[in-house]
Image 1 (cartoon, rainbow, N blue to C red):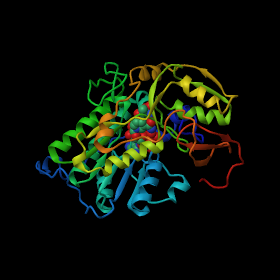
Image 2 (cartoon, helix red, strand yellow):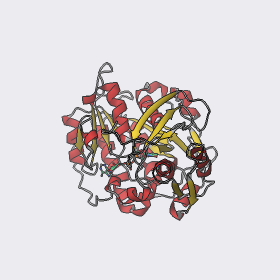
Image 3 (cartoon, helix red, strand yellow):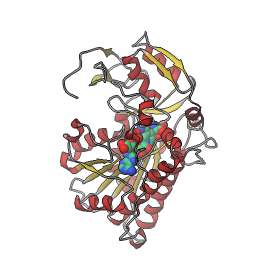
Length: 393
Ligand SMILES: NC(=O)c1ccc[n+]([C@@H]2O[C@H](COP(=O)([O-])OP(=O)(O)OC[C@H]3O[C@@H](n4cnc5c(N)ncnc54)[C@H](O)[C@@H]3O)[C@@H](O)[C@H]2O)c1
Ligand SMILES: C[C@@H](O)[C@H](N)C(=O)O
């Protein structure tokens, strides 16, 4: 298995924390100066507001969640530290604040978002703000505001300012009437969560703006993402991160999904690599604007067995959360990403257990001062207990 390394906070904490944006309750009034209806309907399919020889100037919304900080790190390596602005409504940790430009941005504040785009001459926007599946069901009005109204703000601004726009979708954009094993790009999509409904809406609106206004919209449907040094934001797949943290911290893990619940998953490095690759792909290569991407697929029982090879003392019990289980039971079990592989050469690097270990990738500190070692390209090779390091790596 590809991964794992450090530890994140408890799912229950995430559900209650401000990290999910649950503190926001006001939907600001939109102040549209130029409607997308005023964007020329014959706008160029390829139009971007920067010369191809220049680096893009990037804004990431909702950047302090599980995925945004890692994305900023990858993009800064590629485009330069000062060309990538991370934004969120939360206060960044010290190491994030000092790692590159950070700005407050509430995606529900259209005028403020527009100012940021204009003043910083943004050319690429990665729209990560969202309420995930489980927290979305716990607060539907807020999920509707952030995931749908927020998306509308982002789409309008992107269209007005000729941005290249990335919006992630999810396995959650499918529902119980979709084919589940495998799930192709194009099939029936009738999700039964506000999260899934908002993501189908995002896919369709983005594609509509693309064909109607020439917006350079790009979208990947991510599987559940496994990360080591960032915490999940309140989704159905969070267990696959939590198990590593609990294995390291307490040696006990209580899973909130049934042992045989199979879901598509992906290691964060693959997810971020795919995101950059699809944004850099020539428009001509994209036969679609929304693609499935896939890497591995496993059940809690299979994952637990794999982790127990390295932490034999790990005790796993099951206490099923009915809301999450119902969501998981309606989602794909395996994802068909053949179109992404054909069109722009998508290929994952990390997979479930294979025997050879190629490279030690990363060491990160756990909350309790315990350190896990993340290994590349296959199995979780080893987990070590070390003294807390003085600084976050
Ligand atoms: N992590 C996954 O497994 C996964 C899988 C599929 C798709 N995705 C998608 O990828 C994106 C990023 O996911 P993540 O796991 O980092 O999410 P997350 O929940 O960890 O982070 C979302 C961020 O959005 C911010 N946010 C909430 N309301 C906001 C507002 N009004 N204005 C600005 N920011 C606001 C939160 O503060 C939070 O930092 C999301 O769109 C998600 O749907 C994630
Ligand atoms: C799958 C994904 O969209 C997210 N991790 C969730 O479970 O809600």
